[in-house]
Image (cartoon, rainbow, N blue to C red):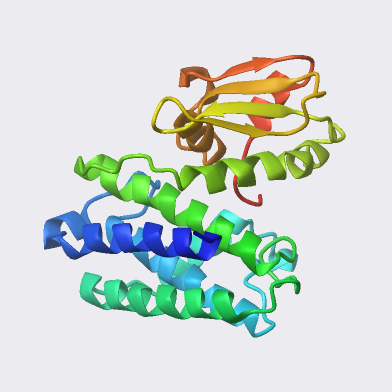
Length: 243
């Protein structure tokens, strides 16, 4: 399985869930503050269209001179393009397939422009998987729909660990080595990231690790442990997205 296959599988799961929603569920509040379920899907459609544009050489990015943050930019886009659920659902379905085709056929060694920094297609696909998974939680949680963890979380855990140096640098704290020793969704498999020689570590369930990184679970409410001089800071700075 490639990252593109995992992204497709995650999107297939979400599409199956969305196809079964009724009108009241589409209009219901999601766990993304201020957004309905329809708004979340619209955001996913817009950003998937951004992937297609990125492969074509354009970047989806806030207008920095206006002082807009990434979140503000995303919210403005959603507010400007709200539509009926059926229209939004079809827009996302078309956009996600077009984005996946574009990523699969892009030059694997050529970084693509994105919100904060260029990314190679495989890394951008990983961020898209993380985004769809996180927003899948936003949709299914309030609606009490099952959304079990899968082995695809390994991609998201890798992304969160890979992003730690950026997060430390953004916080003005250098880029210390941090090891992650995680347990996969089956409760047995070990996922390890980072050098054995790292003096700091984060350990615990991969599902909690990914939720903390996606800002869907406060670190203090997770089952994660942080050790060493930089472990607690790493847990606090953990993320899967640009800010």
